Amino acid sequence: MRVAVLNGPNLNLLGTREPDLYGRDTLADIEKAVRAAGTAAGVELAWHQTNHEGAFVDLVQGLPKSADGALINAGAFTHTSLAIRDALLAVRVPFVEVHLSNIFAREEARRHSHLADLAVGIVAGFGAGSYLLGLDGLTAHLKARGR
Ligand code: DQA
Image (cartoon, rainbow, N blue to C red; front, top):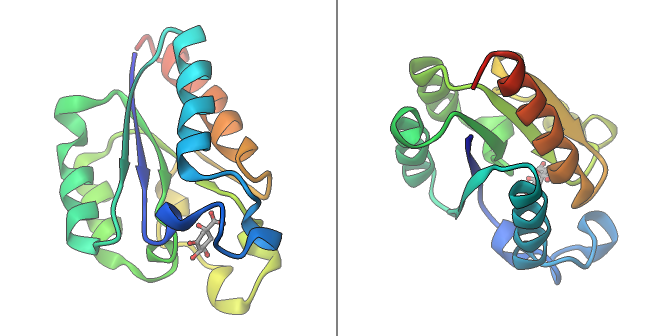
């Protein structure tokens, strides 16, 4: 099973970025933990991060060729990007939306996701654990569909 993890803007700064909110794990720490869990579950993992909306759209457009499913933390693009929503609508690759913080307990502008209704499910609020829980949910979903 092939899973792509797509990380959006500013997630490259994890570790030093608002640690009270996002924790002290770096994105590389999270990648290491997700890769370990993926290996144990027989998942082939591709890990990406970009600060650029168009590059994120390109990554989504590439999913049908490279992945059976995706974990997506689009960062602030979650709340703003119709372009990423349109790309996800176009490719129809199953994905789980993940967030370190509980976006529904934050400012009004963060309580809406342009992606959530297209997702298999959402995991938010567990810090780095959101990625691991998301991977569990995604792999179970894909297995149930014979992937
Ligand atoms: C985030 C939540 C977003 O609102 C924010 O813009 C981020 C991180 C999260 O993982 O909690 O960059 O996606």
